[in-house]
Length: 76
Image (tube, helix red, strand yellow):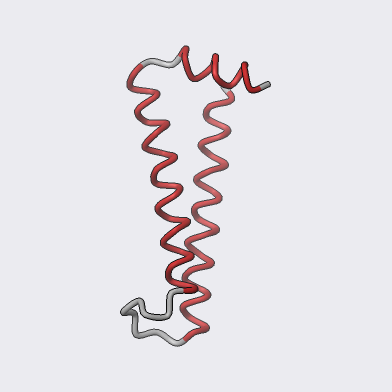
């Protein structure tokens, strides 16, 4: 299964590989940003804790949706 994934990535053009790396990078950015907003108390955001958790959770859900779309687009 892992060999199939690597073969699929190697068959892609340079543009498609660049977009794959860019998609993974933005997935990680949204995930880390959501976690930072939720758990980093010294982050200079003047929000109530319940709104911080809601906003951080929303960013994490959005990153999960991006990740699922990225995985599904690579399966083709």
